Image (spheres, protein in one colour):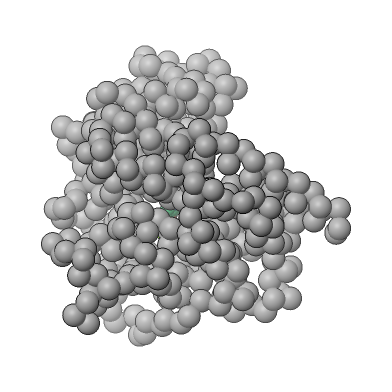
Amino acid sequence: MKTLTILGATGSIGRQALDVIAAYHPEIRIGFLTTNTNVELLAQQVERFRPYGVAICSEEAYCQFRRSSSFQGPVLCGSEGILAAAAWAENDIVLAAMVGFAGVEPTLAAIERGATIALANKETLVVAGELITERARERGSPILAVDSEHSAILQCIVGENIESVERVILTASGGPFRGLSPHELACVTPEQALQHPTWSMGAKITIDSATLMNKGFEVIEAHWLFGLAAEQIAVLVHPQSIVHSLVEFRDGSVKAQLGVPDMRLPIHYALTYPQRQPTELPRISWQSLSRLDFEQPDVARFPCLRLAYEALVAGGAATAVLNAADEIAVAAYLQRQIAFTTIPHVIEQTLDAIAPSEATSLEALIEYDRLARHTASQIVSQHVQRT
Ligand code: NAD
Ligand code: MG
């Protein structure tokens, strides 16, 4: 029996993880399930999965759950409640599936307890990659990638020496706007941006996929997970999303991991690593797969990818600023305050306004996050006044 806590159980990754556990992992006992506000779904998950406890970030949602549920286990409230669920001493595995900066502290708390981290919440490595990987090494807490590209790389390097890797190539679907001109891009609505061609995901990552910031975050994630330099991490657009990433070795050989675009497979692999256990998940239909296309990403139309590489190379707190500015810009776009093409401007202007310095302590990163959010919000207001 292993105990698994899911941070962000009601999200896209959290729900798919529970499906995978119900179908293939009778050996897993559920510790805590956590949510921000979605207590209706949490109540259904409690009925079905009988967790040890739950944690609800929003106080209002917590009160609603208390009023309507007869759940007998611990019900924790607020960000302290989420932290306590992450740090619960009985957790063997913590699935980090919250979204954005909010996941940083709970993930660190789980690492401090030495739990295995199944990491979906890539923003934690964008914000605090050095701190998280250093503490994980010190605490002996393995970090297993759930993100499909990094799961693909992990699957390609099992049994290999990381020194023999020349570079990795992360594949990107290119998002829904791959073929649009700059003028067309300026007019795309949140509804259009939320229609991802190959993956069904939460709102924030779907917008990040459309701007290619998601791929930029994944470059930073690969840097921290596999210890690769920025120039060893390339990106190719691959619209079919069948090849999840490639690893080129120093002898000229290339390995890739392929599969249908379905997050249940990388979630399952993180739970069975380094073994493989059978599933009935969908198989690739080779007959209907007539071609696999690859092309260079267009960083002129999608500058977020360039901004992410630049922040990685700048180092220090630059990637924490990148993340905070992106969270603010994406929220403003979803609220129709700014155009799709203004998202990278807000991020670039925020990065220009804040000089990055060494920042490895959690307190310093929290301070940079706060400062960058404030600056990005002011820049958003200036753009709103201009339109
Ligand atoms: P989502 O928006 O569907 O779900 C987010 C979850 O986190 C929800 O349970 C929500 O209640 C919880 N949450 C959000 N803000 C919170 C807060 N402030 N405090 C406490 N809980 C909070 O997101 P998702 O698509 O499941 O993505 C989760 C993470 O996984 C993201 O970092 C994303 O980049 C990454 N990821 C997702 C996919 C995917 O297919 N969805 C693929 C790869 C990586
Ligand atoms: Mg991914």
